[in-house]
Image (cartoon, rainbow, N blue to C red; front, side, top):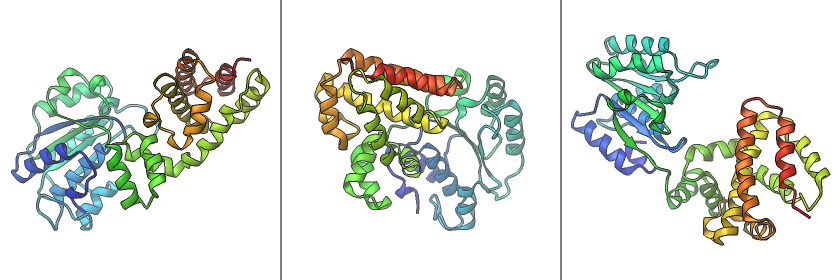
Length: 328
């Protein structure tokens, strides 16, 4: 284990490693980038490098301090997120965090707080955090993690050193999945394309068996032949049974329509995400007009939003699939 084994993000890793080595870490950082690409992983790795009992300015991953940080049990490293029954991070949570940071370090080393996602702090919580950002307790580091900075107050953003993160390159993803996740090259290529540079998404795809499920979902969508509205209604009934499964279907359906549209307007096989479905994509993209594909892609996103707002799942999916039926 160690900082050198972090996958990707070389520039950000070099910046943090050099600052750690020279004892010049900033009091507050803002890690910005898409979800699931390793921002929290790097933040925790930095905490381990600070507290590791075996290595200087790096971490072993095996000592008590490293293991405690990885499991969320280190007294000097806090990860702040919404409580299990809440949607945001409250002012009370931030005030409790500030009180903790003001106390003396248990280990004698720097204390760290990771707020993830920082954009879920409500406005009072962000305003409360400003005091700590403006007058940080000695020996404390704050790391704010966000997919974008738009949900943070300008005064919060301006007091943290921003590091921007981008998705991992496909070649790096493929190499990692083969060498460290035991995937075949074909599996690695498909996962790297579908997850668009997110190792977090790879783990989720594996856990939820998304690769296997999308084959059934594809069969459902391509079965909606011209004028067969009964098939659309039957498919909607089957897909709407479970909320989470319905949302997963819509997540993949958006990728499917995106691929059809990409092939239809650009004829670019190398840009296809469901690359193992290229023959089906080529066939079906030729049968649907580009304007209709634009509409279906938009409606798929709208359907996901409606279901997340607890509208009737079956009605939402019926509306989408009836629109997806090919015109006679």
